[in-house]
Length: 335
Image 1 (spheres, rainbow, N blue to C red):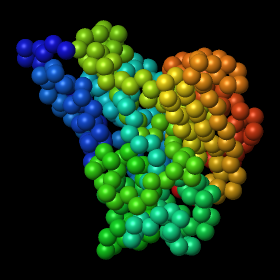
Image 2 (image 1 turned 30 degrees about the vertical axis):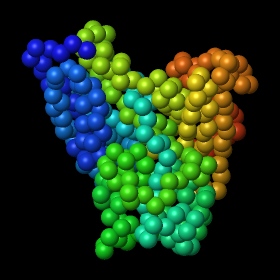
Image 3 (image 1 turned 90 degrees about the horizontal axis):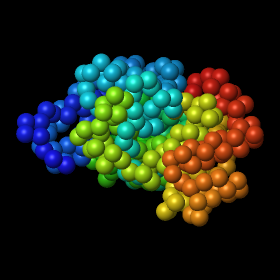
Image 4 (image 1 turned 180 degrees about the vertical axis):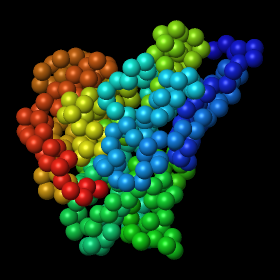
């Protein structure tokens, strides 16, 4: 990439939390590498940063996104970086998801006192999470636990389980966030996806720009295209398409995880009742020969990944996922 003689800095819009700044700084440095440009992190305050109520009460999908996107549309920043799992599945007018970098570890992680694993927690142990999906799967695996609703940044949540003022036995966080915030040493148990299936797009970042800038080309469009990771985009596309087809928001008790090798793409997903007592789950695969079992409908590029997500969503809906999710959204006192 050719360096500009006096290049303007890349203005990158981001929330001001330690995690958001860490992942935005990483993305920004990758985008400007070799251009001679600096990165200017522009802090944007969102509804999710201001309102400390559970996400299910303040709107769930989009509470960390709307203000950042508005700064982009208003020309205050050039690109914005999101945790992809926080993004609404409906495209935003005037904005293009131009880049999905290589994914971090998508698993959930337990941070517990005394280095305890999930299996080692005593009956009645108090475990904190702000996610209905995590709460339900915790109760599915360990119905004897006391799952507590919590909010806050990584430091705040970890302090609830570790340290002199801890009031919980453990908290559950995304492993990707702990890695990006340099707090991975405090993970006591990486939860296998067979126990805790991740949220759709968990561990992935999404970088958005104005559609007009993407279509115009130039150094920024080139940098975004180069930083995009096709296998991650295919996996995330399958997961987010399933979420959209289920008409469920990012805070709904829905989990999805796609893995790939070459052109093969395997998608597993579930919808779960808040108490973990009822689960509707399934899986579907795109084979390496470019066919999809059982319908044989294409290779695992982004387009076929979307069809894969739609097909698995139909299977879950046929099993009653809609009724389960409607009941979950109406349930009182959700985490």
